[in-house]
Image 1: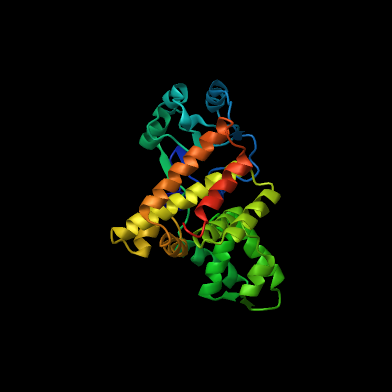
Image 2: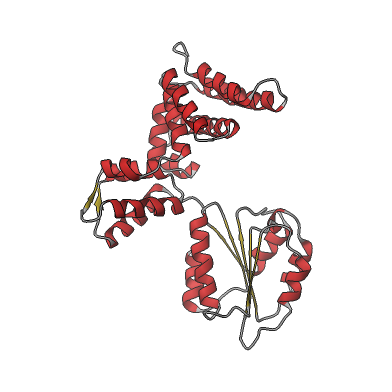
Length: 328
């Protein structure tokens, strides 16, 4: 990100950029910054956008070969095209010889680093990966938003806010906006405010359900499962999220067993510090062997659903029952 900011400040741009990664908020922010820096406001003649899969590479190349209309530059923005998941050799070859007036920006969720197109962009342009931000970065960002509005929040309530919102920056911004409106006329944002207006994400309900399972609170675990079904969450997505949570418990337990501290685990797994703290607490209720067995059970359950041996709702329910039994 710093290199893109430096490019914009100095005016020494690369002709090809690839923005990739799971943090859409930052990708779109920097996409807009780069477009604003390269193209005069309102210049729709020389700015072209392509979005989604199925784009015609020949059309893109043809447009790239078209001289800009009364301007120094032509810019083409390509988003979520899937070009970086296949070889796309023609486009990679074209990047080797693009005209001096042409600037290309690719914005993708994923990119295969082994592919020819990725390697070509890496050689000729600039690749920026926008990953999930850690809790320290998110906290600073939220505090900045609150400070601009004259608001304050305790560290404990900040953790509660992040527990509600998750680490998706777009979602955080929406929830903070709701809090600002709700607390208009007051300086301090409290736990009660957060619980009153912030939406709990499905993934957080999953975590609550896993906690209930690990605490052998079968009734609560099943009640939360039925709540998720009532929210129209597909059982197989719930299974996926449970499996991911148990996998995270195993990873945290293994790293802690190797002597790694909380901050090190958070950095290694790319998750927030308070999530590590919660996982460490939950993981104490299981041995590594039990967590590995859980992974096998989740895989088998998915296979049973796919082959028609069990219905999806029942399959997940049986797993919840198994791992929340009092005798473990």
